[in-house]
Length: 272
Ligand SMILES: C/C(=C\C(=O)SCCNC(=O)CCNC(=O)[C@H](O)C(C)(C)COP(=O)(O)OP(=O)(O)OC[C@H]1O[C@@H](n2cnc3c(N)ncnc32)[C@H](O)[C@@H]1OP(=O)(O)O)CC(=O)O
Image (cartoon, rainbow, N blue to C red; front, top):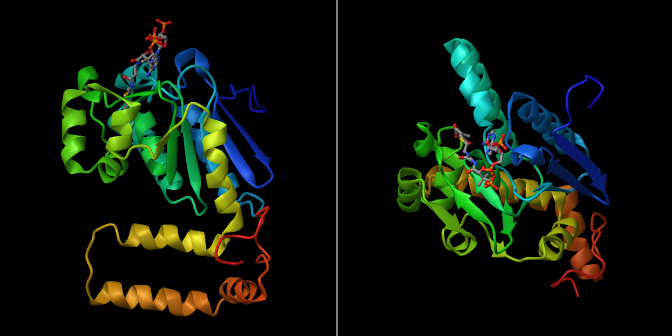
């Protein structure tokens, strides 16, 4: 229980620049209701604002990563009016959006089942790694529901063609298929070992540069390369190369030293 006498469905801790957000409702396979969604939002906002946090790791306690939305929570929403239903859905949408726009690199570590909304959380993270026994499912239509709030992130990751298949069939797919369909980046039964090189790279890179990469890639999502795109990209590099971090990175390269933001144990490649 936390100070407000609510159960603590998430744990968060910050260690050496790594903010861990741990789903902690293993008795229902980390299914999330309105309380857990609110707790996730609070933790993500805190990590986003904390300059000590350089990387976000999303992981889960228990056998499964997450069974998605809590089906008891969804069922009891029939007793609420449309306005209340919409408010609840908006909170889930806010959670996905905050995670997607998180201004630092994010990494999801997935074990066991990742169903429904859990796939949304995974697809909002920059990197996702699962173990070989992980299984994935967009089960919503089996339940008479719709993968709605999660759809922008899942469709972006899998592509329209595969999203249609898995959303319409609600079939389970394994880690290998998740890798093929770009839901995850890597399969490894030692999730911590697999995460380490990513975390080390993120801690060595320019925080400002990585934040801008996320904004830039998001801005380019529509795939349109027109005059406005050219102007946008030119403006970004023109600004960043004269910024404090831009100049520090360039000076560090020529001085053959680590830039002052870096927590890399060894000099970054290219700076030697
Ligand atoms: C975000 C949007 C929509 C959604 O996310 S809809 C939810 C989609 N999720 C699912 O379809 C998952 C349903 N669960 C399962 O398929 C299985 O439980 C499992 C996760 C594969 C695990 O299977 P296992 O055999 O190990 O365990 P049990 O099935 O016996 O479950 C134990 C226990 O947990 C309860 N439970 C499981 N999932 C949920 C859940 N999502 N919500 C609430 N409770 C859940 C299950 O009922 C069992 O309870 P008992 O009391 O022990 O019987 C919409 C949008 O995008 O907008």
